Image (tube, rainbow, N blue to C red; front, side, top):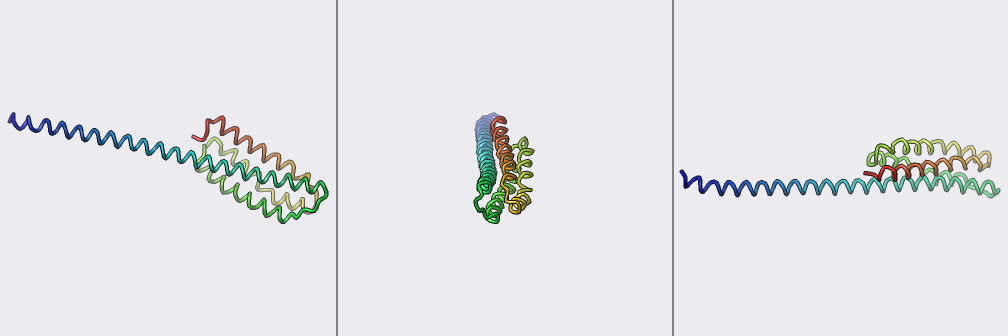
Amino acid sequence: MADIANQVIPVASALTGVALTLAGNMYLERNKWRRARHTEQEARALQSYTDLLQAATDIARTLRQTAERLNEGRDVDVHEVVAVVDGHVGQVRRLGTVARLVGPRSAFALVKSLEDQVAPLYRLLAEVERSRDGSALVEPARRLMKTRDAITDHLRRAGGLS
């Protein structure tokens, strides 16, 4: 009996050591995978917010340039402006959805505010086409930039996107 115990104990000890080593390696690999996944999600969130803020900037810039041209008395093809703004509004809507999926919840209200600001732009551009008065475009452009800056500041204060 003692001979069997002397043979089994070292084998059991070795198997236990192997099992603990494998379990430890699995634990470390799982944590490494989680960290890599978290980093990938942060990069995706950062890219979506960057693209969202760029689309908002492009809309505001287009509105401001259109207002300047109209106030200078230059001819502006409002249909062309609407087409450009429409593309950027589509980006804001799409990227706003992505930002809510991958970004911090604390920024949801600001993203929603940005989306709400771009919705009435079509009606505003139709009014500007009729009146040929570009001053109505200045305030919405200013509000978009202010919201863009608020989102940027919020993300900086929140310690990034994690």
